[in-house]
Image 1 (cartoon, rainbow, N blue to C red):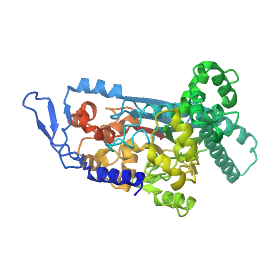
Image 2: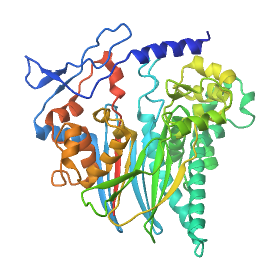
Image 3: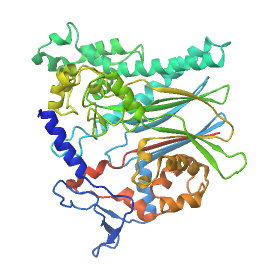
Length: 504
């Protein structure tokens, strides 16, 4: 059995032995401090079935919990034309929040969306005790932060240029043009993340470089000339880029080349109609909610884009068809055992020639993939890309009173919703901002639901109501959970959360 197979076998044993139960947080009161509680549920066990030290949390006074929550969260609200936008993010157990939300109004409408940073490799080997932790989550935030700054103006400019030539076009022609804009812009942005690395390996084909030549090229002692050249080659951002800006480009490029990445779900609300265009790349969920025309308290909830991950049979079928006869495409429900998502920006270890990745990208910094795997991929997985940068683009007609919700996978995968079906989550994500069927959801969530008078920001109200609502004990657990170092696996079970709501 080859080394990669042995690693995978051990990974499988470790992964399958981890038992997690976070649906009911039963706590026993400490006799030393009445505000400290230890989890009595066996959250997980190691391979030998030995319980690890339990996490604990402290029930602080409510004002102090509120201060903690505000430090770990962010929210915005603004009215743009007929649409009221609200956004909310909540940092889970990571060192920093890797998600980004944005709204970007321009003359032809408004763009809005969510970037869910580090969709994969920043977390994927945390549960494998024999593989060193690849890197902290900040690399994911670099790519998602960069995308939130660069992609909206790029899209807005391309949309305006395209629509200016379609003043007499049919509706279908306009939609087809928008499809091309989003597809081209997503591909262009993804290329811009790796182009600086290609630009550094210049003068001769990368295959001809000796190993001892590569590191000085990637990390020159005095890199000003290389940085200026890098800016000149990929600097479509500004005609006058400084060396500092070039250094930032090197940083964002090397971040993405070392395994950082982000998903993207972007909406475009047209300025002259109630038409919504959505481009989705990754596993953020998007819904349209509409009030029932007869029964005022009931709302429909339609998921308007598919999730690009290995849980989606259509995505599994697509990847399999692109690599016929290739074994090991999906290991432990991840692409090549690495990523749960099947489409994203960055994460170039799954997009480029594996020899290039081993000799160039891995040399650029800490490799997020076990080196034995990477060294075997030229013979086992040599038909990249395995990760796509092409979004699904869809078009929808909205009505006054509709609600649009984008929610990162951190919300849908929250431990509080583990018992919810896919349909129940879809209904919940529309009913919470609509304030509908409160008693039903309080019963299913197991805690009181906050109203608009208690939390005025619609998106933030969704986050709070899913996580803890009016339950101070649950709020304390989310904010003060203390996890022993030996139990680091649980650190990543609750992901960062981002929510964007549009109310017409």
